Image 1 (cartoon, rainbow over the protein chains, first blue to last red):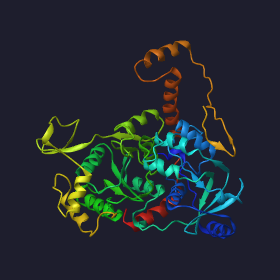
Image 2: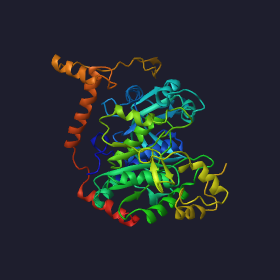
Image 3: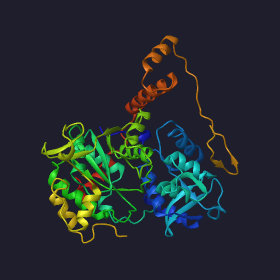
Image 4: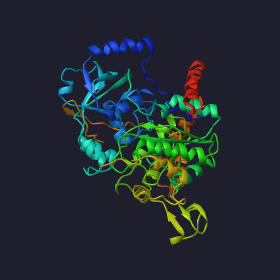
Length: 383
Length: 85
């Protein structure tokens, strides 16, 4: 059986049919609050149950509980705040109990019942979520730029933001039905932001040894120069699955989400998200969701010790490499050889080779995947 | 613990909510012995950990299938159209 949704019930806050038509009309009369695209993605993730059991943006009590205890007020594990920040002038005419309309580029996206308006102490928030207040940390920098007031309360989605990858977008209700139809009882979730090299494939297949299926769930969202373009990642994975995975063992769909770079806390968050998609297991990488040297390499593994009630099993698979002596992929637990026998995978090195028009060797990346990447004139985001 | 978040204009103290549960002193002693070297700081921490594990397991057993037959058919139709099925 696929995993039970976090909190027991998959949230559905999407207005449909007559209700939607009525709410769209209502929205025209309501005070509007414009949101950035990243917050709008959170909105969709709430509405479709990716963040179950949340039904809206966090209230003061929920945020306090998450920051201090890494749990919702009902004791359910939850590590990353889902909040809506606004300027004082945005809320000059809004009172607790009012309904408002949330917009992106003036397009109405959702109605929200404002349960609470409260202030945020950004430094405290940053310290608790990111374990630092250093403004060079990208998550902290963003937290410090947040607007000063937060709105908490439930939402109802009436429109979505444009999605160029609708074909690759499955909601939790859909993946759950899909996994069941495939007869999968155990599913390992894999998060990625890269085109796959052999190290990624080895980790996924290690998980496949004892699960029925792998759910490859690339994060699509804001990228930095030098990153693979979203369409390149998708084509590279499609190629890999087609050529190197047995039929009926892998599913890929995207997650529209902005990385927070909150290291261990975000690793737990990623696991909860995949639990809501129906995964029973989640592959947690070394320095998962980390940035710079703010977190210890295996801190994202250790934090899971605090959540015996998470409801999804984390898989800690060690970093892999190609061993010349073993003539194959291996990791620290499976290979006794040392030094130059081991070819370690470096995403940066592979990228540099591709940028020079060179083909990474087959010990690094499958030739078909290389072809897929090089079929794009500009596979990387330019500066 | 002072959460240091401000609600409206004033600072709000948020106190952790705990309650007391009685267990036999003999069990308390057994847990204390068992805990040594495990990293748990107190019997309360240990018991909380174990209870969360057990309670969540029982909660999961009681949860029902979330979709109606109609939901499933509608979703399957979309999955077929997208090539997933």
